[in-house]
Image (cartoon, rainbow, N blue to C red):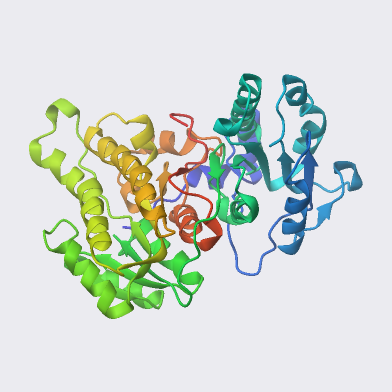
Length: 444
């Protein structure tokens, strides 16, 4: 079953539909700027604004220029609308300095182009030395999340907290958030610390569970775009579709029931024998069995926990137990959900499992760090998939509109975030949860 089409969004974007929506004050979701091969990084010039000492401003300007952006010397240096506005507030420590941010930021924000990006750089709160500094840096989250809700025409606003030891590790997350790859990421906060060890030189290998369709298939495609060989894993019953996906991305297929007792050893053996180990592990496979908690039977409870939480735990333990199965610098990315953060009526099993994987990556990250690796999670919001196509009309429409971008995401939006966290460019991002939800208004 194909993913549903957002007919309402298409109707209100042009012609009579747009005029009607304006008169009624109804939502008008913008067409989001997504990755296209050969497209420029930004839709207009970038401007970098420094506050207080602004220790990263010069590096940011240089990195954006190297990535192909036209960087304006100052907001008033051009009359064009900005494709990206970067505010370096990482050295702001007093309420007076916080108050001074409005004067340069407000005019630049007003001139944000269609699909433009705002990235605010802050400090890691735990690394600040005074109560006032901690308060001021925490205030940046309220600012960013409010601007994310006020941004228009598909614009996004995010906060990067830069650790004292981050250095060059800031570049990859910055370039991701200003790019078209982060179309459905807004109002979010990521910390960047010191880069972990580089991955093993040579061609990379990734394994993606639940790769036969939907988000899993999109993840395989985006990973393969950078030349990664993707081992596409799914049930034997999905064999024909799995083979199509594997062939399309130039990868290979592996039929595996991830809940089977032999699955961990079978996966580790396959990866060692056929590929000499793996660089990226993406735990994507998941199921739902929705019912109110009091009416949920044991099978509906345990089956969701087994697939969504127990299987990733066991598979990862199996890879850790086999020497060489996880290569140096290996990165594990787990699919969580916004419902694992905020909860969802009728999804006690699903929400528990998806909250569990957040705990999994935080603890696993510490274990992987010894070998230069990292673990992170991606928490999607409402995404247009075959599963959402089966939802009743009104809940589906509500799911689409209750975020700042007023629309559902696409599988590729989740895939782009996974691929970013799997990439060496994210070497300074570890043990974190990246929400891909368009700034969901519930739990975000």
